[in-house]
Figure 1 (cartoon, rainbow, N blue to C red):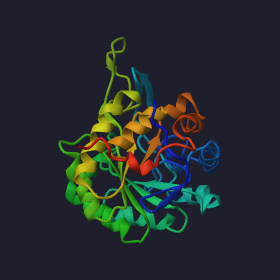
Figure 2: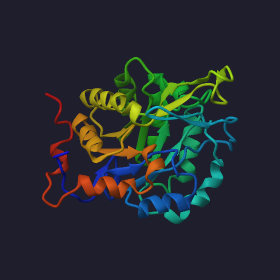
Figure 3: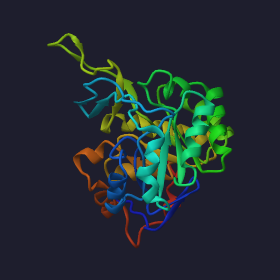
Length: 296
């Protein structure tokens, strides 16, 4: 990689970040201590595990399996619901984005209200591909996306919307989020997928279907960010298979103002510093000059 960018604080979607690199939802985001550790390890911001209106134990195992180029997971949105407030309270004032889910606009608003005074922003999980009645079950309908987004953005807190790639036209969903008052779009969540054990003659995941993450979906994520950049005016946060400084630059050229890193943390918990050491240089170019530069 030859492109290096100048370091410095970043402001995206109403949130001040220490750099362009964030921890994605669902990875080391279940406790306040793990979130704090990621911030201390160089993440410019962190996103929590998705929190819902009621406590949830999640799907039966196996919930995570490795596959070529990534991971398959079907966790089923396990979370302690409102009790999670105690985990992030000590991180008040830090760039902590609270991922939430719900079954309708009222549930989204209710959950967001619990954390409005603590979280730097709320990220709406409208994209999980393996939770019946939640996530992508709502996030494929532009009308519902707009309504859920408006229910949260009306609280006056920065509102990010995480989109599913499992749609015919992701730009319609991005535009719906923008109409609903989103301050940023996060693209993308996992790609719906599955594997079958030929020995057991059954799906390897307890839930049968899951979400594919990791390097295998990076080209899908780049394409989605590129399309959204041409159809939406609010900032885009790239997510999906990012594991190197080169990936970050490519995402920014596609149109991302910042990125989230998830699966790659499994192999390198210090990946934020690893990427930053290759991405930033005091004589690097201003970051905004490459955002969307791949568009003719």
